[in-house]
Image: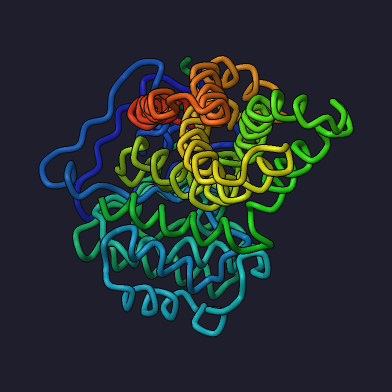
Length: 184
Length: 221
C-alpha cells in the first residue's frame, strides 16, 4: 500500500503540487488520475465538461520515437488529435525547438525530448494536465517555460496536478503524500 | 477516429524507415524455403510433396518474427501511456498497428512466395494462387500474433511466450492454407480451402484487437 486516506478536490484554474520522497506514490497517483492504473480502493470523478474534453498525462517517459524527426513527431500529434499541422509548428517554436525540426528523436538531448513532449500540451488544449516531474532534465530557461505554460493554463481556466521536487509553481496547493503514508 | 488513422500512417512510415522492417522476415522466409532441397533432396516429387507444408510453416514463423517489437517499443518509450491517457480506444491502436505492420511485412512475404513455390518445383502457373493464399494467410498470422505480442509487451525476452500463445491460434489457418496449395497442385478445387483460410483471417481481424487491447491495458496498469 503506497498511501490511503487521500481526498483531493481540484477546481478550474487551480494547480496542485504533489510532494513526497521517492517511492511515496506521486507517479502512481498521477497514473491513477490518468486512468492508466486502477486504484486498490477509491475512485476518481470528473465533473461537467472535463469528462469529454479529456486530459493530458506527461509521464517521466517522453514518448519520443528515435527514428522520427522532431518536427514529424509534433505533426503526428497534431494529426492524432485531429488538429491542423500548423499548430505543431507553433508549438515547436513555443518550446524552443524550431531549429531542431529536422533532427531525429535519437539526436535530441534529454531536455529537448522533454520539450518535445511538452508540445502535446500546446497542440491539443485540454483542461486537465497531469505532469510527472515536468521540469526534470530541463535547463533554467526550460523550467521557466514550464512555469509560464502552467500559469497561462490556469489563467484560461485549466487545472494542473504535478509531481514536483524542488522548486514548484507559484500559487499552487501542496499535497504531501509522505504525511498520508504515515497514517497507513 | 483521427487518432487511430494517424497511428496507422505513423506506423507505416516507421516500419519502412531505418532499413525496412520487412528485410529480416522476408530473408528468413526465403532462406527456409531455399534450404529445403538440401534437407529433403532434389527429387522433384519429394519437393512437390513437401512444398505446400514448407511454405506455410516458413510463412507462419516469418510472421512471428516482427511480433516481439510490435508493441514493446511503444510501451518502453511511453507512447502507449500517451495513447491510453488521451482517451483513444486501445482496440483502434492495436488494429492500426497490426494492419500497418502487415502491409509493411506481410505483403512482401506474399509477394516472394510464388518464387519460393517455383523453387520447390511447384507449377509456375499456380504462382498467383500461392501469392493470394499467402496474402490471406499472413493477414491471419499477423492478427493472431498481435494477441501474443500484446501479452508479451511488458516482458523482457517475451519472444518465447509469443510463440507459445500464438502458435496454437495459427493451427486452423495453417491447415486451410496448406490444403489450398495441396489442392491447387493436384488440380482439385482450391477455392473452398482458400475461403476457409480467409474466414480464419476475418475471425482474427474481428477478435484480436479486443484481446490485444485488453492485454495492453493490463501491461500499462
